[in-house]
Image (cartoon, rainbow, N blue to C red; front, side, top):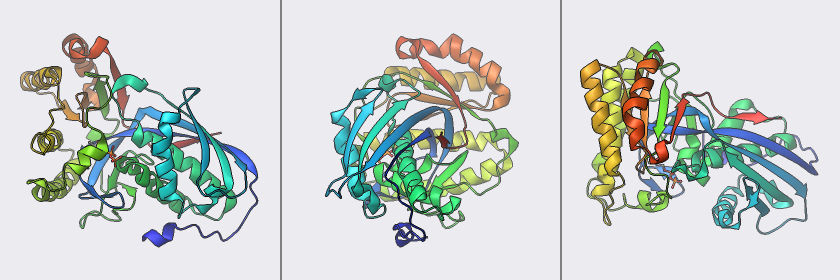
Length: 361
Ligand code: DP6
């Protein structure tokens, strides 16, 4: 599917004076990471993520018809508080998506959004936030043009969300989503995320992700700055090749239920992401001492108990602990007795794999 397929071309046209739509969209955790992009918000390599269940954003848009505006008119509230400092990011998003959903210029919007996880948790809400907003806009499109198919609805939601934040392209569906064109992965595209079409072994059903909040502060490096570090990075090209190879390896591990391979790919991806930041100019260390304490404890526990627990990291200090459903009691006991002490105020979030966004009536 090409970019032009996403330009609004109603085959039916309804009148829509005002209304309201609400969507709940999940966060996601990448197993093979997206790090490095080119204009317009296209990934340098394919990535794959687990869609999460508990960590999500709930967004409502209230809209009413106005005379056509040059810029999209809106106010934004976060947890019932007007947030003008959120405006520039959303303005940029509207500017980018306007050519695909031109009707947004004919309305005034009030956007109300909240996360199911604490704002100051160091968890990025851009993926779930942009996905929820894109889905609300798609509900408007569907109200104006009811003929749009469910398949196009989801693809276009992911396409729009991507223009807000790359990883948001992976926050529409679940439980595993691929974003980025890959020769060996059917239907994969740089333009939008697709449900992983390969076979997934029982071992990966209901996988758990417990997020240890090591540092709840604002991100030290914004994702825009972070991705830009990959331009002229001495190891960038090799990294993009490696990520695409890891996509094949992880597809195989998911099919065979090969937990050991899964662990080695996922942990290596997390450490490679951080290595890229350590070897760029300027360079950053985004892990904290407690991140390393946790990683070492996980390795020791795995060695001692033969558990299939592993970790992954985002572009920050928090640690995502991934483990199979059948180990949940054993791993939860370990997390509580040995790892929580390394979290800021002992805070952590228990999440698991989820199935994608849903509309709230
Ligand atoms: C480290 O999607 O936040 O989480 O496209 O600039 O909004 P933008 O970046 P963003 O990057 C996320 C990068 C990552 C890895 C991943 O989720 O694949």
